[in-house]
Image (cartoon, rainbow, N blue to C red; front, side, top):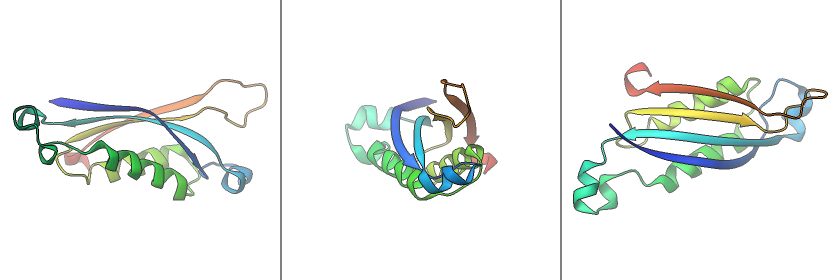
Length: 121
C-alpha cells in the first residue's frame, strides 16, 4: 500500500481537560500518514486518481479549530474518522501534539499516535 505523509499542520484549537484550555485555546501540531493505492495516479498523472491533500489539510484545520473535546485522544480519533471518509483512503495514522502543555516545569511536548482503518470504523 502506498502512502502520503502530511507533516507540520499547525492549528489553534480549544480541546483540553482544563477549563482555560477550552476558553483560551492552544496550539496543536498534526502529522498524518494516509494509505491509499497511488498506482493509477502514477500512470495517469490525473488528480482524480489520488487524494487532493489540500482537502485533508483543510479538514484537519477545521476540526482542530471548531472542536471542543476534553481529551486530545478524542480529537485525534475525530480527525482519523473524518479522514477515512475521504475518497480512496484505506488507513490513516494521526500524530497529534500539544507543543506547550499546561504542566508546571514541563517544557516538552505531548504527542499521541493512533492508527485507524476503514474496516475498524
